[in-house]
Image (cartoon, rainbow, N blue to C red; front, side, top):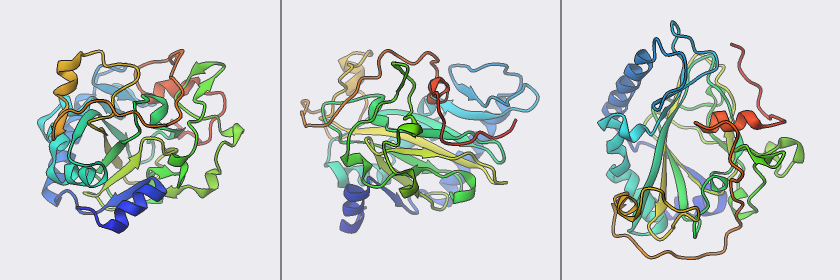
Length: 289
């Protein structure tokens, strides 16, 4: 599924875009399902176990920024956790044994999609090794104007940066510390049906969507089967093993990778968006309500 050049790019840059993974019909189905979720958000006045709402959401004008645990909310979403082309990409990077972790649908709707501040996924869930990645499945064309995922090339080879504010985890880096050169950021753009894959330690973020086009990106967290969570797995070993999507479960493999624990936990829980409200200094401007 991947060429040697793509594998080398992932290892060097920390991210790749793989085009034409989903068919146009698959994209249409996923888009229709997503439209239904947005319509069913009418009447909501607060976040729920399924919906994370934009700050500008109202009961009459539904504005959804995330569908939580999306793989559990609709079979069309859930099927992507075992999509053979996605699994083939991950196996090209890590080998035959792949374990799923979690999923969410981040929605940057036209004109008001919220930004995501710079962070490393690794700061949220360190493992025994760093063969983990987020796979983004694009339901819409991704271009600079509608807030694509951006990454700092090579940052996955560096330190794990502090994601705390006043000693409390906030799920984002303080841009005033200038831990990385944000001007080096590259955008992961591509057509609907493409996927992005970014390394768990890669510094990434995304600007608000101020265009007239949606940018809906389903994000799946996957890990090599020998990467075990340092903070443990609350569901127990049976449920952990049930997350295997290819190959067989493996014993933990320890590999050097700098970690910081996400403790004390963020004051505002529920999603990364809520966590990041604990920041003192922001990089991206927000969209007016």
